[in-house]
Each structure stands twice: as C-alpha cells, then as structure tokens.
Image 1 (tube, rainbow, N blue to C red):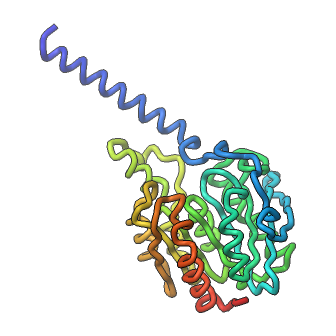
Image 2 (cartoon, helix red, strand yellow):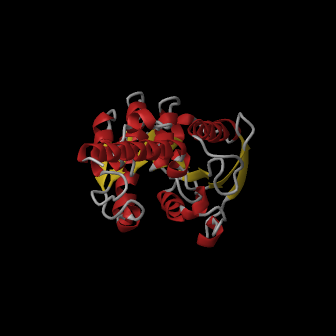
Length: 279
C-alpha cells in the first residue's frame, strides 16, 4: 500500500472514531449529567442531628411524587428552599440543614424525580417542574409569602434555583459552586467536539440570572476541580445588584466544609442585610 493510501485509510479511521465518539457523547448525556445512583438510600435524617423535621410528599403537575423534608427553626422569619446537586440525595446535605437551622431559617429540601425516594426519571424539564412543585408547596400549602423565601442551589441545583428565581419573586438567590451552562461545561471537558451542537441540555444559569430581580449571593472555590472558578465569577458579573461573591477554599464537594464558619457568617449577614427577613 502506498504512503498516500495509508494516510487516507488512517484519516478515514480517525474520522470514524471521532464520529462514533461524538455519537456516544450525544446519547449518553443523561448519564453524564445525572447521578442518582450515587446513593438512593436515605443514610440519615435530620433527627440524627437533633433537628425536628416533617417528611413531605408532593405531586408535580405531570404526576411524579417527590420526597422531601421540611426542617423548621424556632421563630423562623424566613425559609430556605434548597436544590441539591446532581449526585446523591437529600440525606447527603445534612450540613446545610444544620447551618440554616443555626442561622434561624426553616429549610425545605427535595429530591428531584428519580433521586432518593422520589418517583420518575430525571430530565431538565422535569427538574424545573420539581422546582415549581416545591415552590407551590411552600407558598400555597405552607402559606409562606414569596418575600420570605430564599432560593438556594448547589452545582446543578444552582441552575434550577436560578430558573425558578427568574420566574418567581423570592427574597434572595444563593448559588454555590455553580456553572454558567451545561454546554459551557461540556466545551471545557471536550474542547475537540462541537459540544454546543451536540448538547441535549442547557441549564443556562447565566441566562436565567439576567432575568432575576432579587439580591444574589454566589460562592465558589478557585480549587474547584469540576466547575471552573471563572464560571462562578462570570455568574457574579451577570447578577443584579445587590450581590456578593464569597471565595471558598477546597474542592467542588468539600469547599463548604472547609469554609463552614466563614460561609455561615457571610451568608447570614447577606440575607439579613438584603432580603428584608431576619430571625
């Protein structure tokens, strides 16, 4: 075989491999975005931390049943609606529940469809429906006025929280370790692929922030090994005033732990000074 023919054959093989890899990325995206299998079993409850709580089951408008906890704080003036990241379930966020209890706020945390004890299969539109169901539960069934609700989202949950904040009127929005969008994340991970054409997900936190009209608190770590620090800064630049940026320390999943006291103090001060609610 001549060198030219060999190069041509090699080029064909490379092109086929590239197309196959791109196709695999396109079809397996849900497995790259959602990790409910990380742990669907409830490993502990607020009761293990000495926190009172109510188990909540609520229906979405498309028939799924979501599982969550409502953790009341004594004489709480406000309530935090918490949306967790793409792995695990509500029982893996006990540190947050304890933090908000100590700050004097109720917390309502849910598992998205397909996570923990919630029914269904996760999807982008589904997580937005789940957020709407949780908001309705607080504002309609619990009778909590929107101006007393703080939306909190970590990682993937930050996109969900920002989406909801752009459509409702919460007191405040908190984003922890948040990305600008799924296509932005994909382009960072696979710079050799046309990710923006292949992406089946948006979760465009940056775009949602442009329609938010409440104060915004953003926390991110330069050591975050999953979501680039510059994406957190880009979100901060896009957020409306008043706003605050807290630089965390540690990785994507442990920055909260390393900065817990500073985290708690800075967030508590921002909520008190900018939301109009205080315990």
